[in-house]
Image 1 (tube, helix red, strand yellow):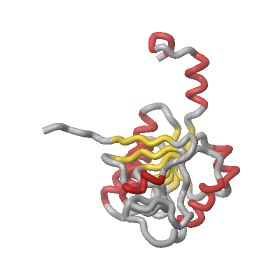
Image 2: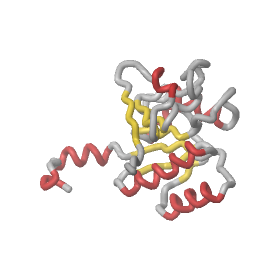
Image 3: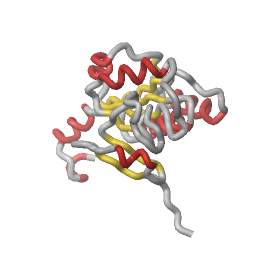
Length: 178
């Protein structure tokens, strides 16, 4: 890269210093999206670690885990406390729950979400912040409050509740015209 691409050495060093990403994957489709994102992060020069406390037995997810393992992405078993997460990571990617989430947050995710809520590290949520109702947002007050939301294909209704200073919302997807 370097100056031929418009970056100075100090800018590249700063970007390299912000490369530690904690990818938190749940057992459903959002977890699958998180595993795919971890793989892409490696290809873009980031250093992800994956917290996947309740692995899916489905072959699709097992294949994603194998791909991540082949890329030497470390899997961690647990997070101790918010200060340890803040010291170890520059960004948290939330792929715990998606649009099918309902009810209360159950173990082992209650501890994970509780710890992430106390973190100072910026959180990016995939499609829906974990713990949010797909239409009504964080109505129960138990969900994550990320700084960034990336809606896949189209924003879900809860995105209208994703407001506040510094919050950023992106829509991502592959759109192929007929």
